[in-house]
Image 1: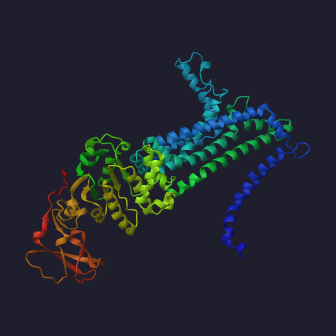
Image 2 (image 1 turned 90 degrees about the horizontal axis):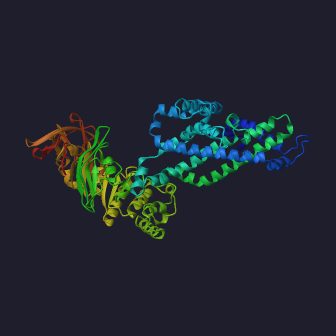
Image 3 (image 1 turned 60 degrees about the horizontal axis):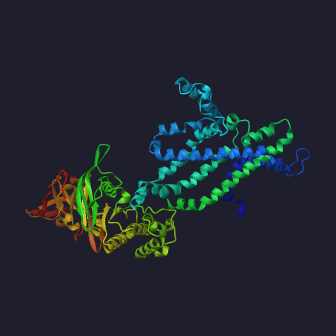
Length: 290
Length: 328
């Protein structure tokens, strides 16, 4: 019988361990979160009351806007800085030492990175002490930069510092496959440097930037450590809010915590599908054309 | 039309081009031939404006373009790869240069379709480059270059990645197209046969220098230096100083008794084949570490020792044995 053909079963068998891990850990976890967010916590009855309640809460909307602001701005800034650095320094990145130096921030956990930012940039950090030492500020408290401001500069800085190397890691292989012939073709057909970028680099970079952007956005939107270390009391980022509701003594907020995470997941999925749909056609032409 | 005067390019202290001077008249095709690493591609890139010139001058249509940016020179460079933009259709690719010139869309599309017709690719205007064969891609790249009507077209071994049959047909096709358009062109190739078919003029280039220029047959028949003799002409080089053209060599069997006016060289037959109804032999001359391909009616076998003979009066002296710079 065909079903027993070893060649047919082999890929399924090889995939089985990862399918089991994903199915049980992620699938089961997501299902439990969904179930908990739609069940009354005392009776276990199915309900949408927690979503209604959540959408009425000002704290949720403030957290959502803050999270979106931080995720979008740190993602865009990381992509732009990463793109700029890769484009300008690509020749040096062929050298292993340069590459190691740039990728160094990736070795630190986000938690450590957040503490480094406090150490360097906080009002009582190294930089403010240096400013005071050199007489650029009268008091340490006058240090003009606040990492725990309303603008969440500390969180954004931490993410940029951590994610720019990741952007470079993703973009470097793209830049290494460009040949000087492409630039020469555009230039001799009458194009300037901007046309070279637009015509030869951007079509290949765009899908990778989108993919990288989604990874960074999803991670930033749903990560806990950095905002818990550097965030302000109100508003909190969604994961911190969810964590707080989940671990409160009062268990009645647990379904709300789950609903927050389900909404976060839906936002990420929506953006991911939208981006893949936009870039799919172009990705196909570039992949086949090279 | 195109005149290069004493062009010199150095990189990291190494001379890539050394006082290169030559001239191509309007509507002519000059083929540049020579070994790899001889500076041919750098010369094209320099003329296209992609390599800055510190010494020397490039004059195009009577005007110096030496300091002009590549996009401001009426020059298009084509490569071994077609370098079509993979995310654009054939029509968009061809239209690209016209779009950069800000020619109105309707007119530019018409011009692009016209040129696609001329290169026989009009039926493919809507397809993407990956759907085309290598030869078709080169035709489209050629159309893209022609449509903006440059004063000079530069080809950097455009056919070297194609199969021999396609390559043969494209050579004559490109030459005819260039002639029909009255286009001036520089054509870099490794292949001397291709250079002879495509070029009105030949320039032999090695070590960053042009060693000899002239008509394809003239340079082939009368190489006046070691580089040209080695890389373009065919024959036997003696002591890096004398040259015997294949035209005057005769292949004889081992028993041949020459006369006092003849010079004889011993060799071994490595291979034989028929081409164009003519028998050819590849002969190794071990003591000179040279190989030569000879047409002959003699019947000799592989690994047989043969004699290559020439009348002494046909042994010519190479003037320029050190490969010194020649002003062309």
